[in-house]
Length: 318
Ligand SMILES: [Zn+2]
Ligand SMILES: [Zn+2]
Image 1 (cartoon, rainbow, N blue to C red):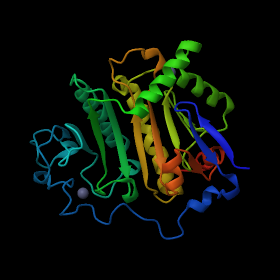
Image 2: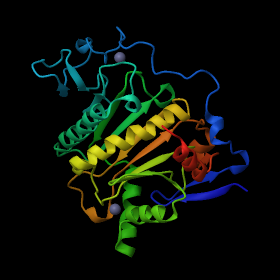
Image 3: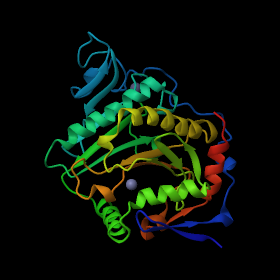
Image 4: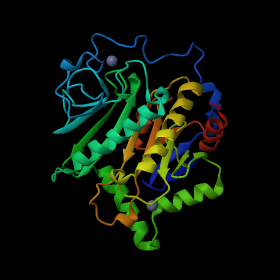
């Protein structure tokens, strides 16, 4: 029988439909591996080096000393979105190269990307109107990515979403009852069970969540209790720099570069009740379509057991 599982962080249900389960290997495309793009640089791409004039002026960049803003020489570049969804809607261009991705950048390059996330996050939350900040990455055309050039986005809103409020309420309720952080407890349980752990470093744990809503969903949890991504330490950034590309490279090489979204779930630095809240990064591969049932019911059907997904990703050699 398909199994119903509840995500304790959101109280949402998923159906793990093992009857129709495929083996993880079945998600590997039979065709030749796709690359992100053929060329290193694309003339019509506004995010490619040399096309800086095609974007609004940059708000931040890591660039070669002596080079000027909105000119080549940058390694990471941040610009306001040309068609913003909100007042603060930034595009973090992760590399001048059109064909790379986080999975294939060098550790030094990824470090500058993560440092940029933090810098832009802290900059956005200085605006007093801002209540919720989401850093997210759409990889591949089915995820809503309008440009193939590797980039991440940051959107800040002066309102809280219902989803955000719901997650916060659950964390606070748990704290009031148990005087413990729900996320820290969950992490401790996962580390004890070892059934869904994919990898672990000094500061982070990568695991497949018990109630994964899609095949190969992955969560990256900081081990130390922190409510805000903004307060990530230098040492943790180094660690994340190592662990994030590793898991993305596993997707790239073992599942043939699937489309995915990743999202940093975080609270602002000045949020109340910090002891109950814990930031984390969620990666959602798009290997199966989201259909009418999921949209209508809010219940996702996942055809790969998270335990099998973790084992597959764990065994994958890179
Ligand atoms: Zn490009
Ligand atoms: Zn915690």
